[in-house]
Image 1 (tube, rainbow, N blue to C red):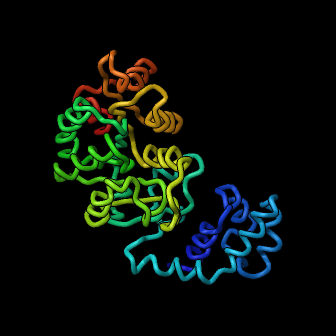
Image 2: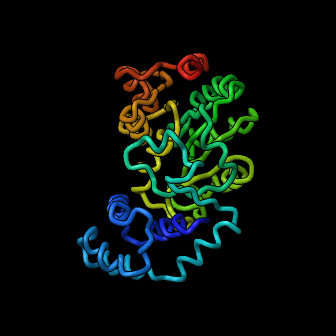
Image 3: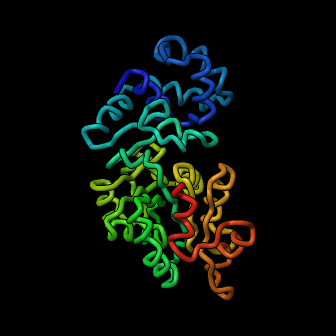
Length: 291
């Protein structure tokens, strides 16, 4: 890891450090050359107004323990990819406030494929949702589409497993860090993906997942994907947040229609009413992707 990446990653580990704070620090010191000199005492008070955060960040910035922790990531198979690296997903870079740093375990070459499809849905998947994935995925995989999902219970896990079953590739985007896979039931799946596919997070590996990180994670799923397919979703479901991110970034939104009497189809049917493309076969997606 070069010196700049080390310093940016160290900043990223400081408790209380926000995306905007890092942005303002980089504006004042673009190469972070003076980060460990007098710059923190000059720059940090200008970008951080809360005294508690100011003290915590300065304490973390001078912590050898954090630097040593970062050095141990590589021996543990964790790659650090900053927004300035070639490996950083091109489409994600085009989104609003893209992560400064991505922590990755697995095949990072998957990040810059031309054909990523985000697939999300209810954590309480029904037979209909599972059968729809089994019906749609084989042709998508055959055409080289990489499935991106959130390694959550339900539709996410089914999507990852079906991609693997069909000898395709898949990327898991998690809330929390790589050392804290949630839910526990998906740990075996996550470890398999870390070996043969890819799992990524925008949070340092030791970060325990918090509720607010899950909707934030959704912006990465849609951000690295050319389109997002919503399989099943209740009204006001978290999957609809992913769809909204995709719309805001000008990406395709696909939705599986469902039974009007099923609560698990309320969100997807509403998306179709609002202009999402109705999907009844893989061709409905591929005709938007393969041009």
